[in-house]
Every structure is written in C-alpha cells, then in structure tokens.
Image (cartoon, rainbow, N blue to C red; front, side, top):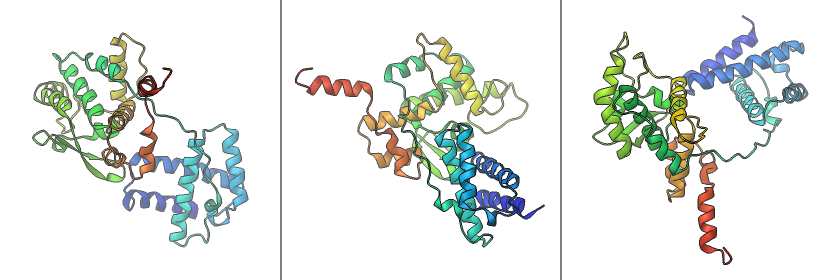
Length: 300
C-alpha cells in the first residue's frame, strides 16, 4: 500500500472513530478523496504534499466542465479541506492548499413543504384495519410529528420510544442524541401499530428484530421502503402531489415557525448543529403572505 492510500485510510478511520460520522457521510468523503486521488495521479503528482493551489484550480475547472452542481462541488471542496486539515494535524503535510479555495455560492432554494390540506388528505389514505395500513399511518404521523430524518426513523428501536412520556430518543448525525416529543396523533397511531400491526408484519419474517418499523416481509424498513410506501399512498390521492420523504421534515419546521415557535427550539428539535441550517425555514408560506396582504393593505 502506498503512502497516499494509507493517508486516506487513516483519515476515514479518524472520521469514524473520533468524529463519529455516519457511514453515509464517510462514504461521501471517501468518494471525494478517491476521485481526487485519481486526478493527482493522472497529473503525475506522487504525494499529497506536492499538491499546489494551481493543481486545485485545474481540478475544480474539470469539475465545473462536468456541469456538477455548486452544492456537489462545495461538498468535494469541504471534504478535501478537512482531509488536508487532518494531514496537517498529523504532520503529514506542511500546508493546506484548500484553505485558499472559497466555496461556491449556493443557490438559495426554499425547501418545499406540504400545506395543511395536503397533509390532511395524506393522513386519510391509510387503511388502518390492515397491519401495513397501521404501519403507514404511524410512519406518516411520526415523520410529520417529530421532523426526524427518514434514516433516523428507520433506525428507531422499540427501546427508543417512551409512550408513557410521549417522547422518542433519536440518534442523529455524528451519533448525537436528542429527545423529541411525539405528539398525540403520532402517539395514537404508534400505539395501534405497536399493539397490533407490527407483530403481524414480524410474523412474516424469519428473524425477530427490535426496529420499530417492519416491511411487508417482516424485516426492518429501509429508506427506500419509506419512499415506496409514500409513492403507493400518493397514487391513492385525488390530487397530483409530488412528495419525497424529506418534505415531512421541511413541513414540520415550516409549520412550527409559522405558528410562532422560536428558531432555537426548532434547531434543537431538528438536531441541527448550527442555526444557519435552521434559518432556511424562516420563509413565509404563500398563504400567510396572501392573508397578511389581504388583512393590512389599504387597497386589498
């Protein structure tokens, strides 16, 4: 194994053990590093120490030529900057050439969220007389009622839910823990599913497991399975809804802020490490804008 590959392995180990990054994040960093590793080898650069700012300019020019999004390029730069920061700490290089590179400005996109009437329609689609219907309803109510990520939802175990207190313990990014209130609707849906539907779904599988949500074959539900459930539900809807699982998280945050919740509380509930990540939800819904205009404009 050459020194470059060894440096990458040491860094990935550092991300997993010291930084407690999720496997998904580690894989993302690994892909960025391997791509950069191929680039510098093609350029005849044998050591990370010999990479210069000019080399990075060529690398970024190639990335832009591939028409990668600003967000994707920003992630690559961030991963490589962290890698060189680690190499500096370990005294494997003498400077961080990525320190001079600025991240591309991001397009400010307002997160898509669901309106109350759209949610109401979704909440009436599940057939709660069936095990899968009870699971689907509990899933919808929990995603909207807590704002947890789909990956966090799929990772939930029975021991993480306390129905007597009405809370759920969530393991977020970096294995950070946070408690979130469940809410009465989500609690009711969960109680029905856990007392009936879950056991019936589990009976179809070969092995018992402690994950809250089970798929049709009794195994643990995956993020892909959640997308499949949503797609199936939307087909029953009368309108032309376009929903992805993360929209429930956007909706949770938007509705809380629109109803007067403070930003810091929403940050805690979402598990954001910085307030800037939460501030994207401070936009106002079109309905609120219209109502405000109609109520206050003299010529409305």
